[in-house]
Image (cartoon, rainbow, N blue to C red; front, side, top):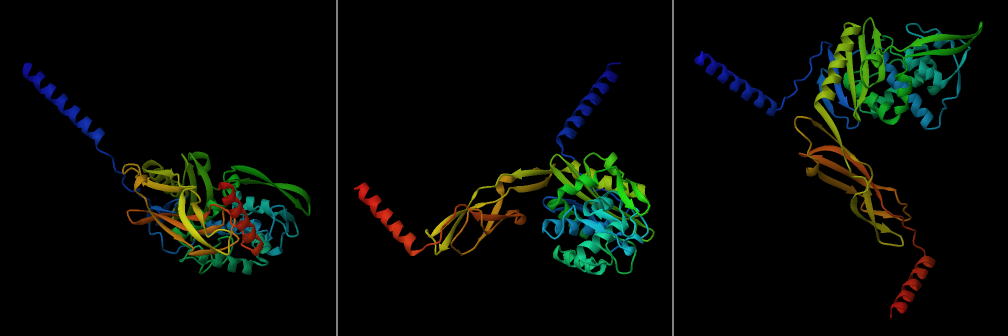
Length: 397
């Protein structure tokens, strides 16, 4: 009996040691496994890729194409080329598009805002074509705008043929390129989430037969089931299969998960969920307070003073694995300032950039701006400055 008690006691001690050690050893996250042929996970503020699988193979994007169409619509409004309240007259071409629609009718007038809603919520192909014709002047010209914007964003494996995503020869993009344009939309126009998180809305129409409504239901069911989901755009055609650019935010960190070519809608949701769970579970984002820090001096030509102070504009977002920790103290900086500036200068004028590096890897680049204003030097101003200086010396004596 005593022998059995000694054995049991030894086993308890061993179990206790194992438990203690297991609590001290960090658990390192294994990368997620997805069944879809292509996928990528990106942190939104830094653009850093946390996971990728065959992210650069061109594939048919289906209605995820509309991310670019929506982006160009918002940019047109921002640049003063259009207004959300503009009434768009629907063409026969737009009204004739099939697939998912919001039942636009030829000759009907509808606001640009409602067209964007129709793309975000119900993935309306007719809404995408109407938007393209209004912003670009024609569908063909808008497609040129899409491809030009893709080049500007560095979407090197993308070529658009239409604004809505219906299958067409040569209409392809990649998981990485989708993440890039999704990030551009979310970073510059976060207000789009008002539409992309709307589960259900009635769309008003004025048809030839009279006033009416269409029932729009969001095609992204994850906005109801995944904590923090903010959008963004689903896609499906017979050839493209199921795709999704999903955006989500938790604890001030925003992620973009892109899946292309899933065999089923459920598989698409499972893969996106796996990517987002991995990102939120094993990574953290810390803000390093850099806004307002001194970045040195810049020489001034033709000003009332010969140099001015400069300062950093904005904070650094530092991304790291939770199990690795964050070392915000050991950031290196690389400052690139203009050698000289011509007066006049206003406080806040851009004068250069500062790049932050960690382990010799650039993690953020922020603007450097003038910390003070400088007036242009004139003969009269120089004379008054000389008089002030002389009076000051006389008073001091």
